[in-house]
Length: 293
Image 1: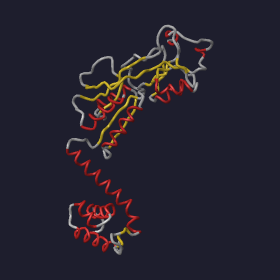
Image 2: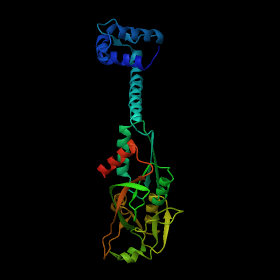
Image 3: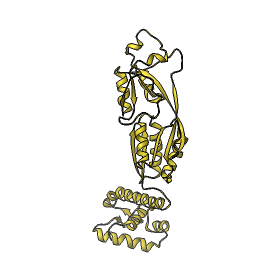
Image 4: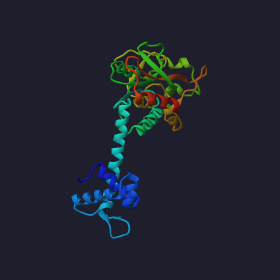
């Protein structure tokens, strides 16, 4: 016999309810069946699990050492049963998510955490890349769903759901020569200054709204783009929640413009292919991030 799902259930029931009779009531069995099941388990293990010299059975030292492991296995078995039931009702076994690299990920990570707590055995893959690359991965069917900035047009192959807005702000290093002895700039002053973009290495920019500079350098990493601007290499449009702490630390400066506000607000969409409708976990993820954004 040894340990099985049934004997683990018996073992824990006796410990949690304090007696064979109480465990039997909780399990819907007769007390003799519980007592015999524990006795058979003890015989196979070669040691006693309960001291029966008291009015009620008392767990032995060996039983107490087994309790944490038994509870862990029981919890995992319960998760397995729930997951199998969810799979039978349409839950996918794996969810592949893509996130455009220059989107603030905090609300997305909170959504992933909520989804993972709801479906702990669901396998979740997360990829980050520049927007044009992440959309290409979606169209290559390598992602189930991606979160990206809304485009300038509508691709009839795609379905989408608005999940919030992202505020991009123009930033410079406080030590950059463009800010020397100047409290504010005109927007057009940025045109001749090198711009740092989070962009694909291989694909042309599909959305040129954030592009202003006559010359620009690309990187596929938001953190690297921010470091390049902090080093004085150029200026960049970055998500406000990401760079706001760097303003407070004096590492970056939000440019003040004389002729316009410094904020480019772009809608953020969850995007998937119409030919590949979302399954249960993906639909729930879209709903979660839409509610928490």
